Image (cartoon, rainbow, N blue to C red; front, side):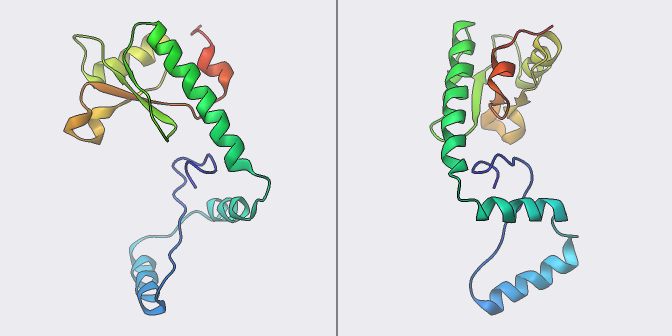
Length: 144
């Protein structure tokens, strides 16, 4: 649901398969958490029933937004790892900054929320993760 229908963080999913195995999973889930919020379940069901081609439209929009974001970051002198199939990109920290330090500067100086990639494991240090889950106007506007 996250990437296909622009629902990042909503965590909607389902299980199919052997009835005994799925039944055991249901039993475990019933006793370990309270389940997915009802509104998220309903939105996911509506999305899965949609026949308008929204995922194709969204992929096109993400591709355009990612090009805008990466081109702008590179024009500003930053090194960007351009993704092949996601709405996230990784931006290399400027010299002298940790991932956390760079994310803090982005937020304070540019009002841009970046996630220190160090939070995704030791290989992420040196990068900040940005997303294009916003509109083009926000991607191209200046802080202020």
